[in-house]
Length: 242
Ligand SMILES: C[S@@+](CC[C@H](N)C(=O)[O-])C[C@H]1O[C@@H](n2cnc3c(N)ncnc32)[C@H](O)[C@@H]1O
Image (tube, rainbow, N blue to C red; front, top):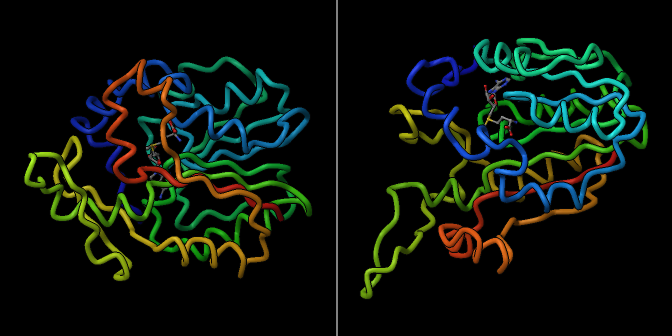
């Protein structure tokens, strides 16, 4: 059974206050960059893995998706997604991506945002997603950037001018990483960029686009706190095709 930290009441309360959960996709600085690599969702049967509050599911339906299946291991996240959605073409289900099996060739587009770094067996998941897509279908996902994950330990340092620096530790040592975020000991899994991309290629995907998200100058003007994202990549955005 996967860790299910989003059902921890303290974690859930803190997480629910993040701008990206209060304002939805517009509160996620990487959303514009994601949109640039999304396929046209019109008429597509979509699966959203780690759907959270269902922001993407609702956006996809507003943009013409035929159906969206939103899956998440957290009962609290799914309950909130259901409460915020009144659309019979969106189906939410509690499901653990570590063991999930989807029917073969049943989706036209697979999507996931900021979830796969919680998954231990990425190889199994990617092969399963490949089987679940019809030939030619797209797979777009975002994860915490492996450099960001590796820079989390032992946290940042300061240079001689007191500026934060971001050492990368144990980058080549893949596997468990623990971090304190709303609660202690949140479990994530670090994989190098090479492993991430090669897992997709080995499963039969063609890589279409790889984006190491950095905010634009306009975004930093609007939200100066985003300048930190120029110091090291925080998110990795990948588009692949079956
Ligand atoms: C950072 S949130 C992202 C939520 C949503 N995709 C978004 O962008 O707003 C990560 C989500 O992944 C879910 N998750 C973590 N591990 C999971 C697993 N093993 N199976 C299914 N969902 C999982 C969490 O419950 C949480 O809702």
